[in-house]
Image (tube, rainbow, N blue to C red; front, side, top):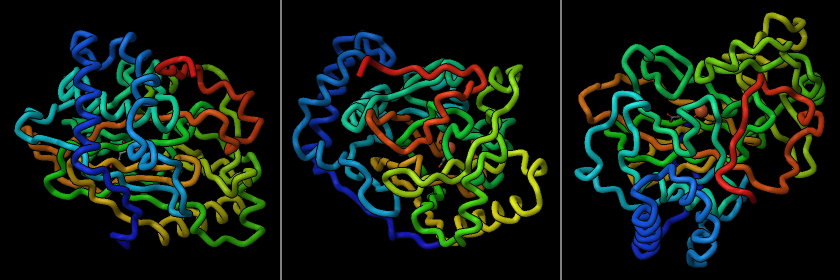
Length: 330
Ligand SMILES: O=C(O)CCC(=O)C(=O)O
Ligand SMILES: [Fe+2]
């Protein structure tokens, strides 16, 4: 898998310090709580006031790769404390990094959360967890996390996904592949643009998995006014329900995505920004340490107001009863 081809945008030490100071001042005002509703409400105002260079580094993804790495943030490993063993014990640890990520997110759009995932938090902790090694969720480790659109089952899924690295001592790679790099026949594009199969809620959404309504079929590919987009999660797509022709086209898309995939081993202080309409992401398998030094990412999801990357029929989807929350009124 090629590496090093990923576009990089650098923040200077002064701009990293500016972000940190803005985050610390917010935490100071709101009881050190990175989930405080008052703090969330202040985000757009504080984000707007950040310097021009920070805004420039956060401009929309502007290549067919559909992603970039923002580099240069401050992470003091000793101050982080041990990597939590599970998202639920992460609590408000390393809160300043949550708020820095929320500020970057607020520059790019509106941070979103899910009622049914990680207690409705706007920043998720992605750590390997005992007992979850073989799942298709962020908590796994020993298996390949197959390339997927984040929250593909839901019409309110993020436009942008941010993965911010706290630590990654074994240089475990996130994988990414853009639909704008694949080559498919017109016939395959036609087949995959038909709403043939549903995408079911993933294992991070226990409640949605029990939803009583019928799963609704959705297109895998869509030609948006801004170019081709995709919605893809093979691990949660009941492919056996499709005809042979459709399955073969889906398999060719899967092969193409693997052909064009890149691997990004995030380092502390780097944020991977993924356009969730263009790019599927995953992760290579690794052996968890479970000794407090494990890989630790923080993740945020963003809606970009005014985007035209979704078929209008998505408005009628039930989303398996899952509710999207927004950090503030945009
Ligand atoms: O651990 C990673 O690199 C990516 C995990 C993932 O798919 C996610 O956090 O959405
Ligand atoms: Fe993911």
